[in-house]
Structure formats: C-alpha cells, structure tokens
Length: 481
Image: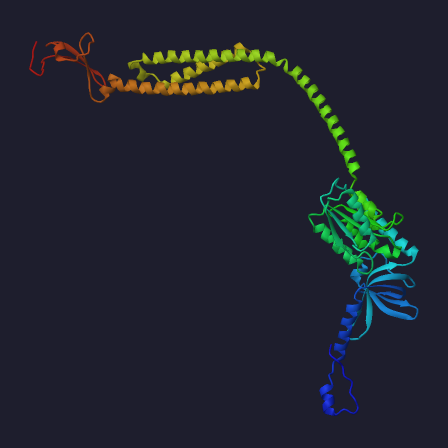
C-alpha cells in the first residue's frame, strides 16, 4: 500500500511537496473494501434482529444488534427465495455471510447468505417445515441397497477429528483390503457448507467411488445445523451414488441423515453399514449355496416332469411316421409313373414323320399337363388325407416344381427334336427349290439307271406335283435303254 505522510509545520514547501502523496476518497474507500472483504468475507455471526424490512425488489434490509452495537445487513432476493426461514424483529439468529463496503459512501453492510434461528422453538419449526417438504417430495423413501462388497468407498470428514479415526479403525477390522478415498472437508463453521458441497461433487465425479460415507462427531444443535441446510440436503438426496451419513449421536435427528440412503448414527456404525463382517459374509454365502442347491433341485424336478410330459405327447407321432412312409412311397411311385410317361412320349416323338409339321407342339404340352393334373388328382383322391402335415404339403409343392421342371425339359427336347426333324425332312429340301421324283409305284428315283424311256414319273414340288414321261435319258456317258 502507498504510505500517507502527514505535513510537518517546520518543513519547507519543497520538502513537503516531495514527501506528500495524495489519494482520493474513492481510492481510500476502495482499499478499505478490499481489506474488509479479505478479512471478513465469510463469517458466522450471532445477533438479534433489530429491524427487518422487505423492499419492492425482493431484497430484505435488516439491522443486526448486540447490546448497543449494531450493523446494517441485507438479504438479496435470490438468496431469500431459497430460504425456508426469514427472520423477524426480535429473533435471535445465527447468520452466515460476509461484510462488504460501498466505495462511494464508505458504509459497511453484512450480506446474509443463510439464517438459522437460535431459539429451540424456531429451529424446531424450521426443521419440521423442511421435513414436511422433503417427505412430500419422497426424498425420505429413496433408500438404495448398498453393494455387498464395494470396490471403493469415498469418505468425507475432517482428517483431524475422532470421527475419522473411529471410521478407519472399524474399516481395518472389517475390510482392510478395500480402498478408501478421503476428502478432507470442513465439517463445522462458516466454511462448512461450501467445503462439504465441494467434497460431495468430487465424490460424484470420481469413478473409483461406489459408496459415499460422510461422518463427524457430536455437538450442539447450532453446531450441527448445517446438516439441516436445505440446499446441502437436496444435494445429498440427488446423489448418483448411495450415501451413508452418520452425524452426531443416536439421539440427534438431522435431515442430511434422513435423505441419505442409509443412516449410520456414528462413524463406527457408518463403517459397519458399508463393510459387513467376514462371519456375516460367510453366513450369507452359505445361505446362497443352500438357495442355489434348492433351486437346482427344483429345476431338475421341473425338467424331469416336463420331459415325461413331452414323451407322452410325442407317442402319437409314431403312427405319423408310418403315414409319412406311405406318402413317400406314393411319391416314389408317382416319380416312376412320370418317368414311364415321359419315355412313352419320347418313343412316340421318335416315330413322328412328315405329319409333324401339321401338328402343334403346344397341344402335346397341354395334353402332358392335363395328364399330370389328372395324376395329381388321382393321387389326392386315393390318398384322402385332408389333415396332411405341413411337411407333406411342402413335399407335394416340391413335387409340382420337380414335375414342372421335367415337363419344361421334355418340352424343350420335344421342340429341339421337331426342329431336327424339320431340318431332315424332304419337305424342307423342297422348300429350297429342290423336287422329289418317284416312279409309278412310289419308289424314289435316285439314279437314271432306274428309269426307262416312256416311264411316267411323279415329281413332287414345294407346291403341287407334276406327272412327266421320260423321253430322254442322259448320264455321264449318254445311255439309252
């Protein structure tokens, strides 16, 4: 800080000008504000409410006094909205907040963040109001089961307290191998609320922590009142992990314990709630083994009974096997019949001659399809099995597909043979301009040695026939008979 030098009456004006350093009032009040906020920024103050007035903007303006001493105080509207209890004139209260100054006026005021009534009746009334609100929200009925053996436990307490040593001692007796992650927090005083809230936030974000334990020793209701603070209790109630809280003694009832998943009362009982004894684990293990044996026996009996029932149900299926065999035999006979029909059709096809170009292949295909449908209808009438199984129906459809495939192949072969016959047909040769010459008895003339002068010949053309008489005969050497 800059030094402020007071003028001496005997000093010369030059010396006074060299030594004198002036500051403004605003700078002075600003420095005072910094000092006040540094040393008195977070306090817990016990006082009597001398006056209390609500402003239009939602702020509250109060006077806190003790005897003849007093200080102005105020509650910002945003802080007042979260308070279940607002002070009245004459109430004795414990307020948490800090002192601040206005640089322009130099006036100081106490900014209140939290108010606790010191009267037993008032404190009990606020406690009951908070309990009614939380119970209506179901915050007292959300206990979650703790893991039988947690992988990691987070401990929130003061490491210099007896509660810390009692908890660690109990853990070493019950489960010395389980890691404990400790956050040293202020559990009493004006800094306790932000310290505990910060510790809880760290535990919520630490993936190693599976269960959170929070504990401290006993004290007066005023000393433990922070654990009835509405915002802190809501933060505990919304924890993503199970929380075990043990604050004070068994006769103390605090809202932080009521919203926790498990209430431990004391540090030792908190450890006992999280870490079961080895004997208890062995007892639970034996109970689980017995339960498993009973379950396996019940499952075995159920499976045996079910197997017997299925065996009785499957007995009529033996007769179905015989019916299935008969159906397969008929399918085999049908295949043989189809093969025979195809062979007969093939033999008939080979015997076709010149008349084939006057007959339509489509007619033969339709006749074959009609015969196939007739065979299928005969099979259905002969079988008479209306209640055929799904597998038999599938086999019939497969047979139809197989028959269609064979018919397609035979039709294709039939068409190919027709084309071959047409290629070999004399009529095909005639269509290209050639003629067929026969004698009077119908013998095809292949050589000039087969005819004589005066013979009549039948010449078949592409269209029509000619009757001719042999008047000349020519050969490679002109020969006449």
